[in-house]
Each structure stands twice: as structure tokens, then as C-alpha cells.
Length: 104
Image 1 (cartoon, one colour):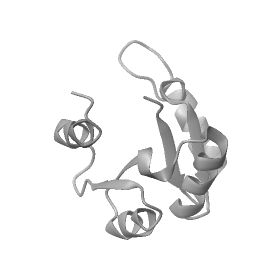
Image 2 (cartoon, helix red, strand yellow; image 1 turned 60 degrees about the horizontal axis):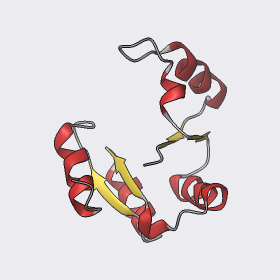
Image 3 (cartoon, helix red, strand yellow; image 1 turned 30 degrees about the horizontal axis):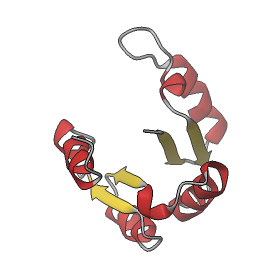
Image 4 (cartoon, helix red, strand yellow; image 1 turned 120 degrees about the horizontal axis):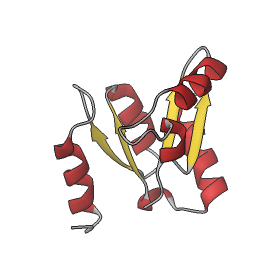
């Protein structure tokens, strides 16, 4: 599994700094947990188009988790499997994706 970040922010450079400063339990910077980072002021559709070009992974083989329903609607128009996470990412959302892609 390849993992990427798709983040829309008014301060992309600050977000990148935070990705270096925030660490997971073993001390790994959060940035090190992902294969690709798409952080910009642009919309999520542009992020996924860029990820498609960079990785060669088809939209149908991508999964997107987001707590903003408008982002889910936009990205799903590309053919990406989208999972709405209104209260943030939870284990059940990951399990839904694993089931969809038969990763269990």
C-alpha cells in the first residue's frame, strides 16, 4: 500500500514544517509515514490528478478519506473510492477500505 497526504491549506509551507515536527509513537516524523505529500492551496481534485501522474496509480485503485463532504463529492467524480469521516479518521474507516480493496 502506498499512502499519501492530500491537504488544502492557506499555508502550505507551515503544513510541511508541521509534518516534520509531528512524530508518531516510535519517533518517526509524520512526513516519513507517507510516500507522497500533496499540500497546496489547490483543490483535492488537482491533488489526486497529481498523485495519479506521479504514481501511475489509477483513480479506481485509490482510496480517499476526508471529513469534509464536499471534498468527498469532488474526488469521487474522478472514480476514486471515497470514505466520509465526519468525526475524523477511525479504525472502522480503514477497515472499510481494506474490505473494499480485499486487503483483509
